[in-house]
Image (cartoon, protein in one colour):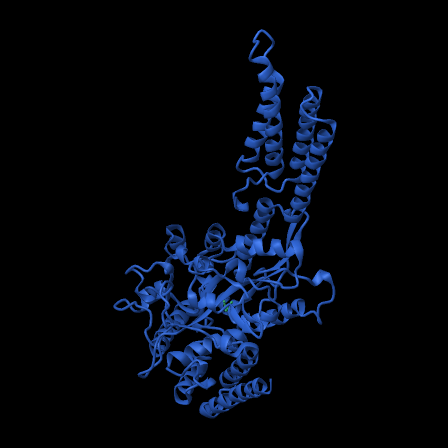
Length: 574
Ligand code: GLC
């Protein structure tokens, strides 16, 4: 029998069989005596013993009883031992068994059960506490409240369902670059200060698998089978596999996906463009529409803090994502591309210059002068206060825009979502940077903590939790089957791919070109350096209103080339 077919409550199961065999022997011997002369009293005692063995067996298969309930197992063991001694004494009195056999059976029974108790202890996670770092952020931020509450609820559910002692949620830094440094401090044994610093489960950015691979538990055995991986977008699943000198490792599994999209105020588009209230197709269209609405609204509101377009301009990963979208949508490449001879810089100078020049022009015209300091939360606040016509943001922003919060009037019914605009020129296309978060287990976690950590990951990506993540936080779950779930689509209508939503048709279900991957898998450990060089340079171009953007783009290209060259020479010397 396969061990998975065994009943979960092994103590009553084993006891049931032992008692059944012995009481059947007793019953048979009594019946042999009773049957020829039925005037004697019927042997009720062995019948009761037989029935009690059946009771143990039935009890062992009752669904819903806790498999690792240590206390229950002890109570059953004591009762079973009592019944066994009673039966064995009767068998000895009837001279069916010898005194030697009596003691042998009792000792073997106790030993088998002690083994089962030891086994319970191995699988029982009751005393176990795990520490996790997911998306509960250190600083108060827009979508943090919903996410924090959701994580706390899920930790409680896990405690109840799996029986662990506790799931401690540690807060993470808001900025993803800072967060990576924070995680590496926990992961790198040279930097870790005490066992207090040990975290078992991390939510990692889609761009980090290559960076954290050496600290990650290989999840191949648990999750890399076809039946499981098919539930996710293959690009995202495969991105979590990293090849090291020891072979390929599954560093993490997808948790939720992200993508950069254009949010627009439907009501304002209807008001200012009654004959054509569709979202802009090109960046030029967006500029014109944003300016018209901005001028009109400033006049109407009699104040000048209304803006046409808000986006992330702070020199960090967020700006890399925004600028990659401008560059790619103008046909300017994807920063680094893998060609026949390995990684090559992929920045078309003319198209990229055009894209950056255009963005440079937005600041102060349709975007706030402080844009260079904005992360997604800062600019989201402007949008949330009804002070912007267009916004580039991640997927959480829809739910947050339409959710009621004290101090804000919600934007219910006023928010449209579309693909980000295209650039000009023949190679222009829509582009959306692929983001998202994955779940990783610390390779340093040991024993029961490791078991509980893997169980927790499994728990977070099961259908029930993935659905509640979408409904309660507005994040788009990684499980593809949920993109068609009626309840989720009602709450996140941009997932709907019917004709009412031509701007995002099939965006989530197809592996379309519009989702641009940052070159993190191909550049591995070097990605952080490349992204920093890229976002610093773009920030410099935008902030200093650099006169010669082309010169700056050429220097950007050279700098990235140098990083790639240095990594090639390291490879060769190894
Ligand atoms: C979002 C994305 C993530 C990206 C980050 C940049 O959290 O999901 O992939 O790196 O924003 O700020």
